[in-house]
Image (cartoon, rainbow, N blue to C red; front, side):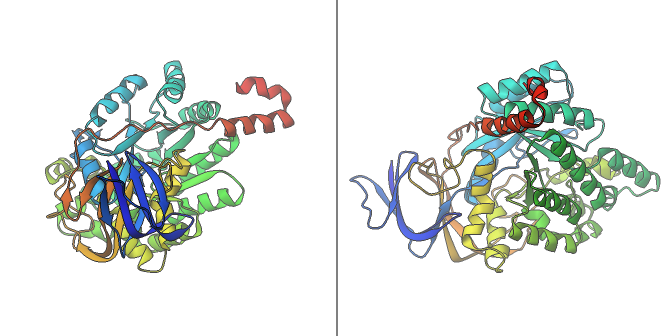
Length: 481
């Protein structure tokens, strides 16, 4: 199919200009003025609108088995909801159970994802360690296009990676040219505080943020950064929610360390007052980790995003409906952790970012698409509207409005953390792989149309590390690989 998106303003992370966009097959064929559509092609009028690269959400959990249940959103419904909101690529997570074969877990998640409507990729979590995990990391990078490994520093007794696992996995990732990512919370402290609060009779959702204070996150972020510093490996910290983790990242980047930070749309806009609601279900629907913080943290996170200390935005989209949340009705530690947001991320960030003067349109593209593409090594295939790039494009009307509601959203959950928020500036058309999958309220996604995206590793970084090591300690090079 040939499409011509005509008359819009193309916005990339580094420049914007009036231009038409010609799409042939699944690829952008040309960007310029006065382009004509070949016979039989379709013209889409983008006059008065922005034409931007489709969003990349680098942190989702579709149909995740977690805390005794399974997330309600599957790969088809989740990618469909994302497409409605302008997201055309997700990076989800393979999370092996302790002692589960890592490659077996990877194959299981790949099977679930075959129903995806738009493109997807995977981070793989390292939840335990032995020689088979060491070998699996190599296989994943060489044969399956995985270039990032996740480490949960929380969830003691389940998937938590202790310092020994971090050291071994970080070292192996460095050898492979892969990126290490961490969920930064001190799992020992969380477990201790959960027990303490429950012993005091605090069982409701209000206990959740009390068991995970910001210092718990800040300590873990700083520890992960220091381990990465010693091992000379790049690090990506997911869902930063507080001043302390932002300060740790800012210090590290100021010292020249290669550390990247992600922030969730929810952490930028929702504060901890939600946990004090007298409506148990309402409060429980906001139970996620890290929790929502007092407002001063939100302002700091916005400043970190504006200053470039935080580079990407995500959702940690992990949906549990009300009956699932009620599994923890008498124990907040048993409330399944997670909220939605894949459909709303770009809308709320445009409204509260661009409309509020915090972000330019090009900066919006950077934090919703281009930066993630660059960090996870799929740029310029993704994250830019340019010849040769994948034809993943959104047409954005800055004047139109919508009110977010669970009654009208496409996410498979009976709650929305942005309920009732009216946003100005919305996605009107989504093109994924060169096909219109959403247009002016009409959903046209096709189950299974999404493609798995290989993400190459970064051998040049490891080569640079070896050169530095050789210069300072020649005998150490052989030990590095």
